[in-house]
Image (cartoon, rainbow, N blue to C red):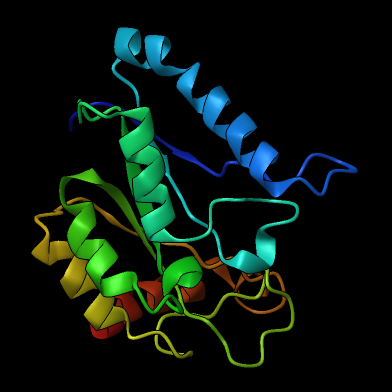
Length: 183
């Protein structure tokens, strides 16, 4: 199974701040401070870029290229302590996504799938089931696996208004069907 992987959502601006550059430096300093513990325990951290709609309060890490730049800075010798989590919901829109996936190669530690609904009611808790939205999930998964990634494909359907309101066995059945059909 390899070393344990923790997925990191890095945080947004500190309360009352508008200094995005300083906030990013604070995040990088905090991540860098974890390196000795990571080396000691063997734990790896997958930096997960989030859609820019979350920059103010959840994550100032917003593109896969940016995440890879942070990995280069935090792990310049490429020991494998820092990698990336690719979440379709957060990165699908990026015009530089496909070259960034190629660049990511051995740094990909996780792949998350769901779909982006055109008429989402809540950007946090209204993710679509695979195949119900606009993301070309087959293309994304194919690109990720072409880098050599052979880890799990995790379904992340945060859906308070739809899928969480349905019977769990129905949601799980459809997740399984769509994972094989759409991804």
